[in-house]
Length: 51
Image (cartoon, rainbow, N blue to C red; front, side):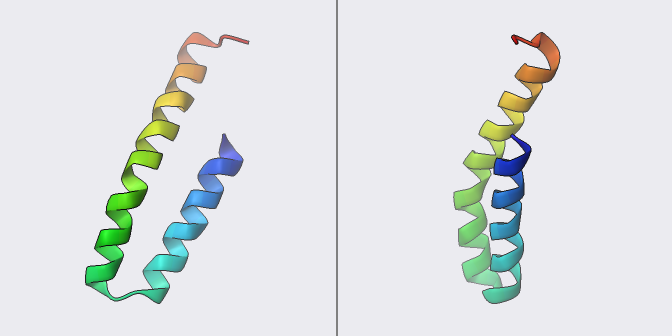
């Protein structure tokens, strides 16, 4: 999970440095569902510990 979160964060940082504000905000709207899914899975793993 940490590897996936790190990759998405690296993409986020790259976009922040590369694009202007309007394009950056459009890019963030695409990343938000991925972050929500990762946080939900991480919470599920931390609370219920299925393994």
